[in-house]
Image (cartoon, rainbow, N blue to C red; front, side, top):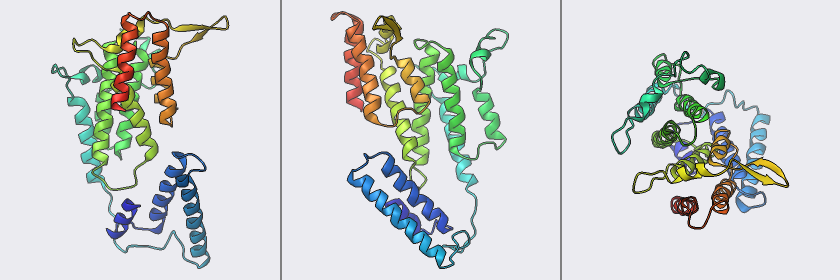
Length: 300
């Protein structure tokens, strides 16, 4: 509400439709991310009904929402701001270096050779690299920050789909994805507007997942590496069932299947619990599972 009030006082709404759109987005966010029957969910539903009744009242009074202007001033596109943010996001990904000074983006600049890796193009249906992202940016294809973020996310997903979870490329893709998410959030915070809660929630889950998966020990070892020793399948009622793993959770995150923190956390804890169940008390896997669960609780 404070954001909407600020935009009204700052005369940033050009039409009533823009104001109504922000109100409806706010109500939708409250309804989606709060339990039905809760005070917030109920209040959002009530206010949405009041808004709709007011819209009908205005329409009956021959006040066309499509024509009525709240502010009589020309509407200028914000291409300059978008272009600056898009450039900032690309540069952040391209120039990112790890603690040892290694530039992670190098392997993502160009796609694998079709001659050397023909199977890559059988597995990956929408190949894209940073050079292609750069071309699309220079040609003006990206009209918003989200447009570029979508292509970057696709590139990271492709890397994780083709490469093994314990490979360096897989981990580098996750590291760059988290850095891109953080940079996008930083750039978006510079613009005023009603935040897209659904997107923010998905980014929160992805950031939490990557932080846990890429957790390093003091000796530089990735804590989750030991989980690769675990069997891929569990036996349930005499049948082999694919066990929940980091890789499966990553695919669920890519598809946006997690919408609540408790569901995400339940799956993550299941991965830890299975690691302990399948290991001896004094094994590295058992201790790593405890370490990662503790790390998750610390950063959550």
